[in-house]
Amino acid sequence: AHYATRPDTWSAAQILDHLLLSDALYRAQFRRLLDMAAEGRRNNLTVGFAEVDLDVPFIPKALVPAMEIPLTLLNMFIPHVVRETLLRYPIVKATHPKITDPAPARPITALRGELVSSLAETESLLKEPLPVNAERVTLSHPVFGCNTIANLLRLMAAHEQRHIGQIASLLRQPGFPAGDAL
Image (cartoon, rainbow, N blue to C red):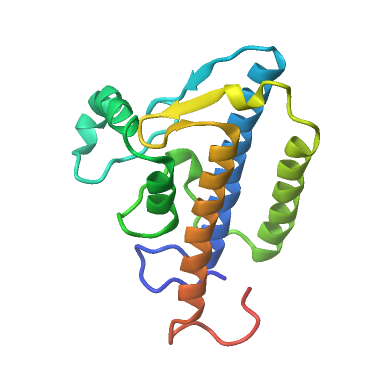
């Protein structure tokens, strides 16, 4: 689980840890949107780079904060399916928020247990009937655009599919240790 093809790439364990941290971040955003909907508000929750920091390919890191407004405007014209596709497939080198940095080497047994718990938490959050106006609350981010709860679920799934592909590729590497590593 801790095998990596190069020192600058993640192992399967690190990918799983990153997914756990990302899922927690998504769930926090879902909760915020569900609370807004339950209060009967029709609002947009704006999440900027200060809260969910991402580097943007081709833009120097120092300029990224200044790009929030231009990127937000640009995303008004980019269909959700395009953003979802860019998240799902490694067309563009992606970056991730610092809060989702994986630990160097966590025990796979702990990760397995946390993956089960994470899924249960997500299911629990979404098992109750959604508030009446849940489709009217949105979350906006300069890179991810303006999203409903359903859009965020699709982005979450696309993100997980991207990393599942990374794990599958890692397992096919000639140097991957034989045996029941995962």
